[in-house]
Length: 288
Image 1 (spheres, rainbow, N blue to C red):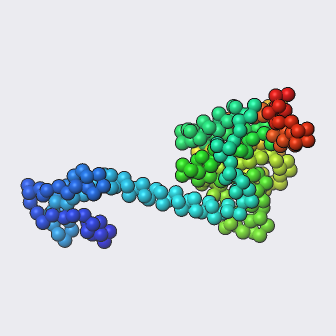
Image 2 (tube, rainbow, N blue to C red):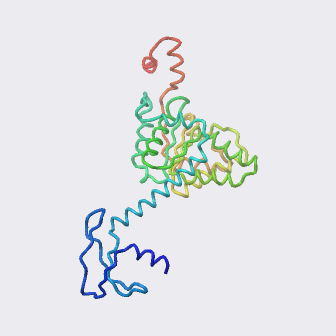
């Protein structure tokens, strides 16, 4: 009753108690259209004509509530991940400063498509694999930064960083902190998982943490973008599937929920070193 009175007090109420004496409409101060008029029975007042809120005002209020929820979610995630040592560098990776080198075309196309159709793809993510230093992290970071600008919440972590965060909570027996980090990984619109399988020896707890994140995001219909230094042979034979768990359930969830693309580009860092030593432009080395 109290909330009803409060709501009614914010609506213009006419003095007319006659249903046939409809008052002049009041224009909406947002869109200019006439506000809907309702003849209702108001507690302690009686039947009256009331100018209800315009639909555009209702939609504006709903959008404001959704924006506040999104801001609060982003604040929580940033609070948990603000100590990430690589975030500043990753935030500098954009589509404007990436160079699409020979062999990167398919990977570039896949990430651009994942950004353009982010909502429609649901849990379908990306797995870019190929040799170290060939632009996989730059591609996923550029796509993630694009989504951040659009208002999505994004977490970018290397596998080692992710596991060290969980390990720290386990070491100090901090269950509350563990669930904060786990929930952030599950609630973010996008999780970018850099360097998948960089940890070749995982203990039982680490395997369980990895499964919880991957399985939890699958259930929530949210994607993960992976990068990995797997070779084509290692990928085709699922060589490291049992590293993640003995039954390979984690590996096949990753494969089933992602578009897997081999980045054929060469190691840019290696080419850069050779270029400096030999005094030859990188472009010429890539043509060899």
